[in-house]
Image (tube, rainbow, N blue to C red; front, side, top):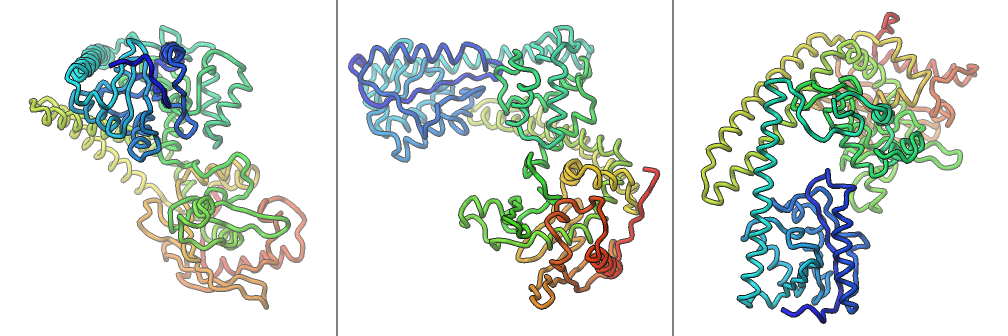
Amino acid sequence: MDASNLSGNVYLYQRFSSSKQEGNSSLFRQGEAQKEWLSRHPNCVVVELDEQPLIDSGVSAYKGKHVEHGSLGRLVKAIESGLVETGSIILVEHFSRLTRMDIDQSEDLIKKIWKHGVSIVTARGNNYYPPEAVNDTKSRIALIIEIEKAHEESKWRSKKVKSSWRQRESLAREHKIPPRMRMPFWLSPDGTLNEFAPVVRDLFSLHAMGKGQIVIARELRERYGSIKPLLNHNPTKLIRILQNEKCIGKVYGEKLYEAVVDEETFYSAQRIHQERLYTSIREDRKWPLHGMVKCGHCGSGMSIQQSKDSLPLIRCSRKQRSGGDSCQSASTFPYVIAYHFFIIYIEPVLMAMMTDNKRLKSFELDQVKLQQEIRKSKAELAEADLHRKARLDAGKNAKASLTIMDELQDNIDSLEESLSVVHAKIAAQKSLSSISKDIYELSVENPKEYNLELNKTGLKIHLKDKKLSFYDPDNKREIASLRYVKYNRSRLSYEYTFQGVKEYYKTELHSSEVRTKDWTLDKLLNPRRERTMTPNDLAALMHNLKIHEQSGTSFKLKSNE
């Protein structure tokens, strides 16, 4: 069909399948071909969807991931919802940029596009596939040839790559021979560290400090300038580096390269990222409970806000962002009550838990390693299952897939059994009987780092319907709770009832109060700062000692840790 006099809105779509292609000339070539086509069609106007380019970076078109989760899927949804005008054009470099799926899947995709009056054009070859082609035999045959060509080429590449990787894996696992492959920027071709190793160490260090991906990228560029490894490194790529086992010298599970960080640093980073321990932490945090309170209604983090000289309040972040539509929590909750609950009832328990974690560090490291291996094996099992279903749907034999799945499941069962043994060892040796002097001194001398250590436990205070709750590490049992009853205007205090399990507290149920006169902004921000004791401080201390006597936490400070 004639494409010489085309006009209308044009949506530019670009894609490349491997993350290794990012930063090379793939997008440039695609863009140049599209520009050249547009120069020959002056009546076509380029538009963007939601002012964002339609680019799928490192996304394969062979299994349709770009349609399920990528920019092409976003464009198709916009077409189906009527946001893309009838008569518009999707312009790609080659047909294979649009799809490498099989004929049935590709035709389904194209029909979705055609159904709403949108055409497809390939810049190289100037092939034009309008909705009318559905009834044009010649155009349909040409289209099927394009689909088959793209699919078979991708299948051939996949087989070639898999065969190559299997050989490399065998050499690494069975013969401990480092595979020939493209090295990450901090490793030389022989697998030893090069001059860029400090960049990676600083990346891990900044991540451990609770800094976000954008801040880390900016600080690395400030420290090292426009060095080549950082030119095309966006926040997503930084996370990929943190997850790369080559950082500890491993490839295919074997240690064959020089490590840039130790295993404790590496697996700590994995746990922080996987369990999203620092999601609610901001660089400019100042409140001791920052990131430690979670909304019991929607599961979102709680923000701490304070204006002028008033005492701070806690709000559900999701409720605030949505204007109140996405959460049923109350608008605000006094921060001073949450902090009182923390410092009087929860902090001694948390410090004792952190002390045990520190003492059992080797077991904790084994636990994180096994959890990582289980996650990886489960992902491989899910992928193998998809491959099995695809073969069955195509009427092919799936016995090989089942064999692989059996091996993976056996490996998962073995790893989970090992994890249970580690859990049992940790549980048997946890005492919760004392508090490390180092941990207590950290809370006094470095509140920001102490806040990170608190968040690293993964334990949160849950706030729901005026009730604060704290659960055990498995979130199966409520250890302690504080229910805010009312504000007593005559005593200027928040009245509450406390309930705790006998294992941790002498008194399981009692009532008390939080007096506003005991708390100032300075004291909330720096609760352990050394300063001259005032009569009010002494009164507050005696008041809190009485509460301690009632609730009965009895952890002792250990000077030898």
